[in-house]
Length: 122
Image 1: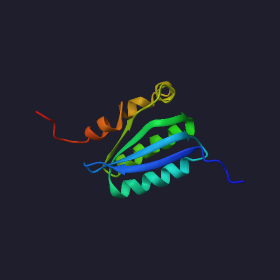
Image 2: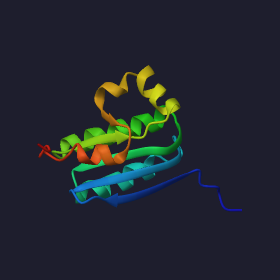
Image 3: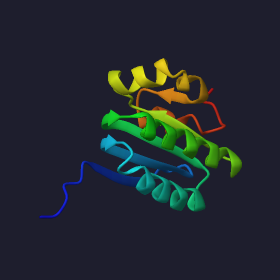
Image 4: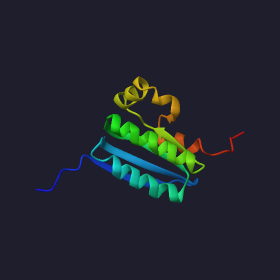
């Protein structure tokens, strides 16, 4: 019997040169390496990246570490990483570990993507 995958990763690009990485299901020690791999591929295409956590049901300390590592990689590449759509449970982990201080966090990926636009509407 094949192992059951408890996560799904998808990506898209917006009209701005911003990549969006969608996390679904669980992010834990069992799949952090896949997130690192996909993030590194995205970083070659865009240094402005949003991780959309709207469908992320579970995040443990390994998953949090993976997201912080992604932020570090983005900054080292001269870019930035924004988060969006944190559920109450995921947001609580960020608050308890004070990791929310490291990130710009938005309610949805549309707002997070728009935050990369240096031109503000008048």
